[in-house]
Image (tube, rainbow, N blue to C red):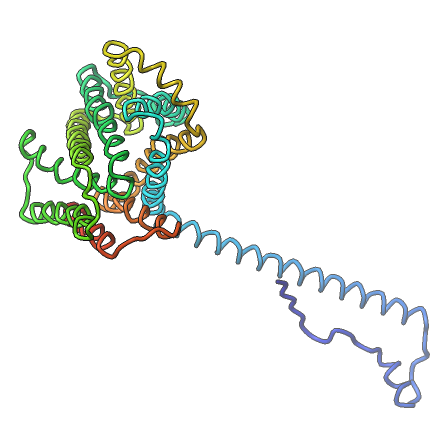
Length: 370
């Protein structure tokens, strides 16, 4: 886009030439040298005028581009946290689908072990590259509390979650994550003397009702009922996640530590505890894990670990840093909706009952963090 601005006539004909065209006798004697000099000066003036207009048009374009970039930057800064939360939920949905495909040759404990061994160095690398990671605020009681939080929430919780994933499938297993926030509110009320309002109690009931609407769908359609052990593991995963969240919340209240460092300590403690438990109870599980990895599509498994354990955690920290916790948790809870959308895109049947139950449970999450 170019804007050229001209003022005045673009070409002026000498008076002598105009009189010659009208057949009039000129009072001045025609001098070819003076006429040539006049034309050269006029051409020089026109070149300067064109150069000035080109510079003016270029500056106008640069100003327009600068305004567009500033508008885009304002939009990104305004919705950066929301986009990060939605992207984290989408990556966790994709990771859940990939974990489901990788669980055929690995047990839930083996899958959790491989996830921890791969994700721990990735988080450590991310913390080393983080300029704000100083390690300040850490004390021995806080470190032990965060480690215990990782053992409960990651060692036990993720093992239960992978067991539910194998028995229920990704669409139903991910729904049990909706139970973690209301369970955490109840545990905080019992242990930390936190208050629970009437609205939060109603919201917890709405969440449980939405989950039950989806879980009872197969029975109403006359199909085989869901695995009871899968439901048990799903509830156990949500309970362990809630306990781990309450312990981490209490640790954050006692000191000021970076959330990324806390996530690393939790997953490091959980992975070390799981590895030590395997070495003590069943050492042969390490050899069978190596054999199971040889039969597993490693690209799918590593993509699930990078998406779900590394990228999703960092995006979650970005979302919490830019928006309120209620909005962040609400947007992070859209992972089941993304799974239903992915299933629909793959041509799988998605019932209206599953969508309505998921939305109903998500409505309870919104009310819980209102």
